[in-house]
Length: 388
Image (tube, rainbow, N blue to C red; front, side):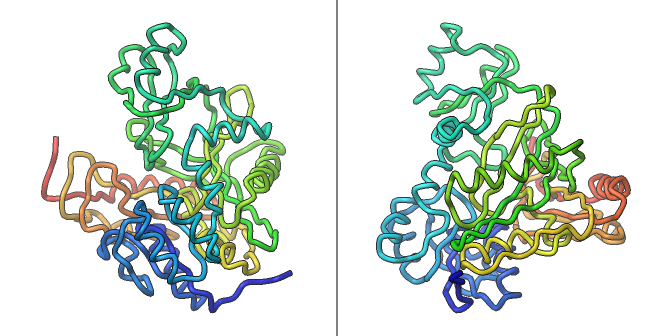
């Protein structure tokens, strides 16, 4: 097996919280990570070996940055892949492969990929523009209830419209989109799988996710997922199959629906570290961030074994607050046993913005849930400025 090198220079497109936590993991392995993003005040700015101010959606910025590193990866999929294709041609190692990134960042192409590979996913229809979707609604080709997803640029709850009846048509997004039936969901699950260029594959334990319905954001994550029978083994094998089908190196965070009828459907994937894996920093032998570095640098993968059951909660900006950040109730919550706080250093808060996360460990999952609920009730991220 040909293994990678710790001396190769690693570059990351994106300087948000994922880049920040990747830099922290890299520092433990003495791997210096360079970051490209618009503002050094972004979360990764203080922790990058070198922070280059630029736009990861701009060809010239991505190309110039990529020429300064040996290995190039991402913390967000909405990057300029044209530049990545050229960098790959010129010998830069790019993970995930830009041809697969082109598929994944377009939800329409992603759904067609699952269909072509015989992988289970919800029925779907693709509409190239809003005019075509309106016509389909008028002719009853599309009938509520359904879910509309923007084909590109959706992130953190944006780019999704849940249409339960005709009264919700004002929520429709005027963009190219896919339409899926509103699935009767028992649980929303996620599995993170990693792969290096030597062909090693490692899978993290399945987690279950609870969402804030109005913001369409993950609110709570529970690990291990509370599943019956052989479902966890099935999901682990499915994750490996999806990773092999995509044939990428790095990470895939795969979101699944467990329907009320017992079916497993692929919702979507992200080819990077992901919100559904933040708990691994404390709860697993190897964190998703260290594993991503190992994967893209073609180093041996770490063990994904769970050390402790955990509950992870996103720490979101409070409703009706927008402006300079203030933390309320943190001292009280720091007294919670087994609670680990990660505040991302964002200077400005706004309603439902991801400002940090907390992972709560306990050998009793019910106790971990109780402690997580205490933090939810007592820790607030606010501002002196309020909005309606």
